[in-house]
Amino acid sequence: MHAPFGPGVYELRNRATRKSVYCGKGKNVAYRMSSLIPRPHGAGKRNNTRLQQYVLTHLTDIDYRTLACASGAAAKAREAQIDKRGFLFPT
Image (cartoon, rainbow, N blue to C red; front, side, top):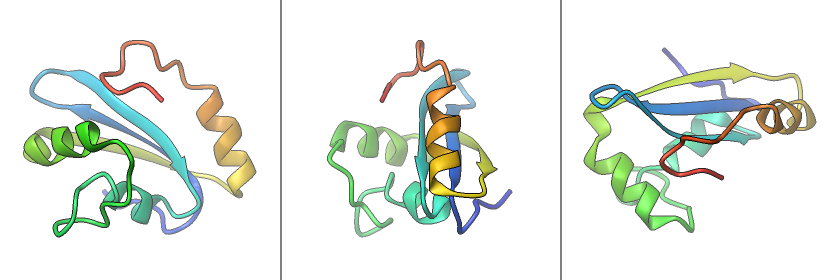
Protein backbone atom coordinates (compact mmCIF):
# COMPACT_ATOMS: atom_id res chain seq x y z
CA MET A 1 0.00 0.00 0.00
CA HIS A 2 1.21 3.51 -0.74
CA ALA A 3 0.15 6.82 0.74
CA PRO A 4 -0.93 9.60 -1.62
CA PHE A 5 1.46 12.47 -2.30
CA GLY A 6 -1.55 14.79 -2.39
CA PRO A 7 -4.42 15.66 -0.05
CA GLY A 8 -6.27 13.01 1.86
CA VAL A 9 -6.98 11.30 5.18
CA TYR A 10 -5.27 8.40 6.92
CA GLU A 11 -5.94 6.04 9.80
CA LEU A 12 -3.48 3.95 11.81
CA ARG A 13 -4.31 0.73 13.64
CA ASN A 14 -2.22 -1.61 15.76
CA ARG A 15 -2.51 -5.01 14.08
CA ALA A 16 -1.43 -6.90 17.22
CA THR A 17 -3.95 -5.29 19.58
CA ARG A 18 -6.56 -4.42 16.92
CA LYS A 19 -6.87 -0.96 18.44
CA SER A 20 -7.33 2.19 16.41
CA VAL A 21 -4.36 4.44 17.06
CA TYR A 22 -4.76 7.72 15.20
CA CYS A 23 -6.32 9.40 12.19
CA GLY A 24 -5.59 12.65 10.48
CA LYS A 25 -5.50 14.62 7.27
CA GLY A 26 -2.81 16.25 5.22
CA LYS A 27 -2.07 18.21 2.06
CA ASN A 28 0.55 15.54 1.33
CA VAL A 29 -0.53 12.37 3.11
CA ALA A 30 2.75 10.51 2.56
CA TYR A 31 4.79 13.31 4.15
CA ARG A 32 2.29 13.86 6.96
CA MET A 33 2.37 10.18 7.88
CA SER A 34 6.18 10.18 7.86
CA SER A 35 6.04 12.91 10.52
CA LEU A 36 4.50 10.33 12.86
CA ILE A 37 7.98 8.79 13.15
CA PRO A 38 10.50 10.84 15.15
CA ARG A 39 13.75 12.04 13.63
CA PRO A 40 16.15 10.69 12.42
CA HIS A 41 13.88 7.84 11.23
CA GLY A 42 11.07 10.00 9.85
CA ALA A 43 10.15 13.64 9.20
CA GLY A 44 9.36 13.99 12.92
CA LYS A 45 7.64 17.40 12.85
CA ARG A 46 4.90 16.78 15.41
CA ASN A 47 4.06 18.28 18.79
CA ASN A 48 2.83 14.92 20.12
CA THR A 49 5.93 13.00 21.23
CA ARG A 50 3.80 10.31 22.93
CA LEU A 51 2.19 9.48 19.59
CA GLN A 52 5.53 9.48 17.78
CA GLN A 53 7.12 7.19 20.38
CA TYR A 54 4.13 4.83 20.20
CA VAL A 55 4.34 4.60 16.41
CA LEU A 56 8.11 4.05 16.48
CA THR A 57 7.88 1.39 19.21
CA HIS A 58 5.06 -0.48 17.44
CA LEU A 59 6.10 0.22 13.85
CA THR A 60 6.08 -3.42 12.78
CA ASP A 61 2.48 -3.76 14.04
CA ILE A 62 1.08 -0.56 12.53
CA ASP A 63 -1.34 -0.93 9.64
CA TYR A 64 -2.70 2.08 7.84
CA ARG A 65 -5.29 2.98 5.30
CA THR A 66 -5.56 6.14 3.28
CA LEU A 67 -8.12 7.93 1.20
CA ALA A 68 -6.98 10.41 -1.44
CA CYS A 69 -9.11 13.55 -1.74
CA ALA A 70 -9.47 16.15 -4.47
CA SER A 71 -8.46 19.05 -2.21
CA GLY A 72 -7.36 20.00 1.27
CA ALA A 73 -10.90 21.19 1.99
CA ALA A 74 -12.30 17.81 0.94
CA ALA A 75 -9.77 16.05 3.22
CA LYS A 76 -10.74 18.30 6.14
CA ALA A 77 -14.44 17.56 5.56
CA ARG A 78 -13.80 13.82 5.32
CA GLU A 79 -11.71 13.78 8.51
CA ALA A 80 -14.51 15.59 10.36
CA GLN A 81 -16.82 12.67 9.52
CA ILE A 82 -14.59 10.10 11.26
CA ASP A 83 -15.75 9.06 14.72
CA LYS A 84 -12.59 9.32 16.81
CA ARG A 85 -13.94 7.75 19.98
CA GLY A 86 -11.87 4.72 20.89
CA PHE A 87 -8.64 5.94 19.26
CA LEU A 88 -5.58 5.72 21.51
CA PHE A 89 -4.57 9.21 20.37
CA PRO A 90 -7.76 11.09 19.43
CA THR A 91 -7.36 14.42 17.66
